[in-house]
Length: 96
Image 1: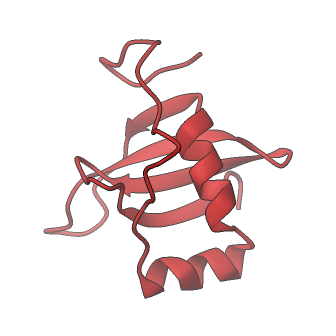
Image 2: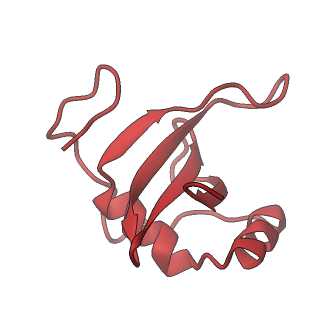
C-alpha cells in the first residue's frame, strides 16, 4: 500500500460509520462527473494513496486527496484537512 508523506503504511482508514459532509457545489460536480456518494465513501475506506493537495485558492482551507480504485477507475476525493466528519470538497476521476 502506498501512503502519503509521513503517513505509516498501516494508517487507519475512515470508519464505515462516519458519514461525510457534502455541499451543493460538491453534488453538482459529482453529477457532472458521474460520481456517487457510495463511490466516494468506498474510496475513503479503501484508498491506497493519500497526499496533501496543492493550494487551490487564497484563504481556502488545505485539503488532502484520497485516491483509490473504484468501479474499474481511479477516483480522487478531495477532503478538507482535519475535518470531522470528513468534508468532501470535490471528487474527480483520474485522467478527466
